[in-house]
Amino acid sequence: MTRLGAYLAEAFSAIWRNRTRSILTMLGMIIGTSSIIAVLGISRAASGGITGTLNSFGDQGITISVDPNQDDPRAAAIQYRDVRTIEADVGSLLAHVEPNYQRNMKMRANGVTTTSIAFSDSDYHNDTLVLREGRRFTGGDVAAGAHVCNVTEQLAKKLFRDQPAAGRSVQAGGTRCRIVGVYAELKGGLFNSAGGNEILFLPYTTFHQIAPGPIDGVLLYLAPGVTVDRAADAIDTVLRRLHGARAQYVTSDNQAQLQSFNTILGIIAIGLTAIGGVALIVAGIGIMNIMLVSVTERTREIGLRKSIGARRGDIALQFLLEAILLSFMGGGIGTLLGFLATVAAYSSVEALVGPAPIPYLLIMSVSVGFSTLVGCVFGTYPAIRAARMDPIEALRS
Image (cartoon, rainbow, N blue to C red):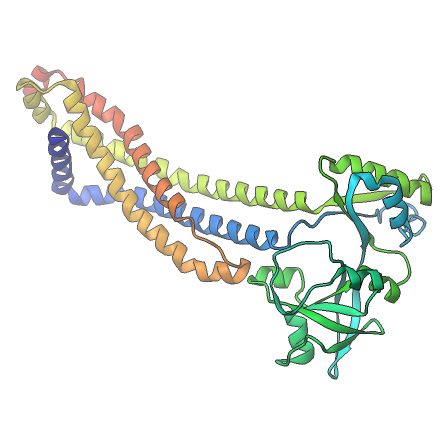
């Protein structure tokens, strides 16, 4: 440890003697590390925020709907009664099945009229969304087709401003319903703007009373061990038997779409990080170049060290530690700048996608790992070249 400390002190002294040259050499390392840390930190935080927000919706199940590109979509329209037939024929493959509705609906309450989106819902779906007021639907609400509804905080504010909405009535699609629950606002402007934020939820039995025609699709949850393809094929068979062999339907696995979205985010983060990695390679080449210059300048010093008993390993270690120290100093400054950029962008990311935890451990691991790797890889050749010098020829120079 004493020898290693002496080598580190000597390496730092050599860097300090040529501090202007060393600072210019470290610039590439600073730029590369800071860009990687900033991109990695922001992208990981955003990915975590998006995933956390989407996971708060729980298992969205699988939706089977009419393929709009077929010759006669109206002939293939799924009817409310078809859900009972599906449950009777393939119920063993399913944990739950219900009609699915999604419509734009005219709503009126408290003297305010608006057109917003309405979704069907039931007491089966579990999520971690927070209720600001009231309660969720119960099995009794669904079984009785009760004229009750849940609304988002944004719709409640639009209809009732700052007044409590739970217990008030709203006219939806010509039917008066009582608001029994208000969902708290999602943290993340991306979801509020992309998915619409003024939403009303009705029990699917109540929705059927308001819109008695064909349903928009079938929402189902699989029994344990059942694959999506197996359940979809079985339900397609039932629907074609009911509506003709030429009827076509599409299956949307909402959970798989979430996983695909997360995969795409990961690929984007890797791609952006790789672009920053190019800067690190350039920085490593700069370190190698400056270390080769240092070896040439200190040829007589190397000869003197070898003449008094220094081994090849000692010479190689000295120059390798100098390269690693250069890399660590540049990487440390770059990490600090990248971390500051991540923290500065955090509020914007949180406002866009919701709570986004910054991966501090990942940032530190990447910083230390890349700094060590660059120093070792690009400092090895100059160190070996210095170690292989002939001491007599080195002294003559």
